[in-house]
Image 1 (cartoon, rainbow, N blue to C red):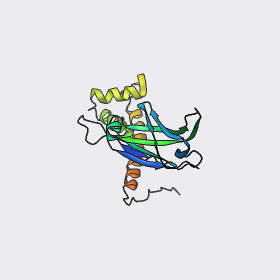
Image 2: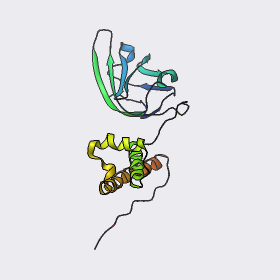
Image 3: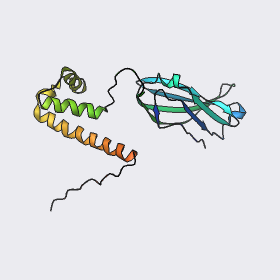
Image 4: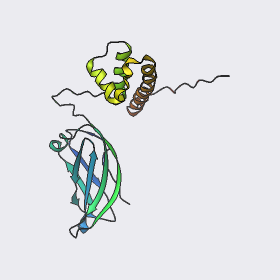
Length: 185
């Protein structure tokens, strides 16, 4: 059984190092482990080098600096000089923006951007950028002119943002109060 150690979260511009063990396809027998990392943002490939029977990865900062932020899917596969190839596993990872980047970046989640645009539209202070975001998401429905629809959307996106903030707090190890459960008798 293969042991995949690829990180679940990667910061663009960071150096990455890990070692995977694939007992059925050891590097010492001529197998090379590869990862294809892909999304609509791009496709990236990383290749292992042999470290005894293990497959060692050393991805330089200069390579990850080119990775665009977003959610990616990865597929791990091995191949050898004889032309054999076997897909071994798949999973997901998140590429976070490079904190040292010199260009401004909107690091808000999709849900947060939508909630901010909806609230701006409800308060009649929406910028053209906010309206463009709403139009891109909802097409020609012109939700920015329908307060009832905006309120329903605000409630939906507000719940998504709260769930994201709760998950982020838990990931940081913060104590999060339990959600309240309302019961009617």
